Length: 96
Image (tube, rainbow, N blue to C red):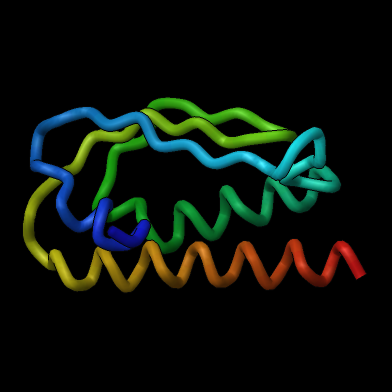
């Protein structure tokens, strides 16, 4: 099951703990601006679908979310994919 599918299957009104981390002891966010970029994109892509209750950095992000509604199920999958792609592109540029 892909990341997008996991988000799409979240049930309305239930809480979920979502996290991701870097490999080994590497940083997931290299600079504070990387972190702020991720949060801006997260808000832009997912704020209408999810209530967000927490997050952390620099080696990982942990998010406690509540699914707002089940409408636009396909749209949520698309927005999760957009967020992950944009974040990956930004972090790839930083590593060069």
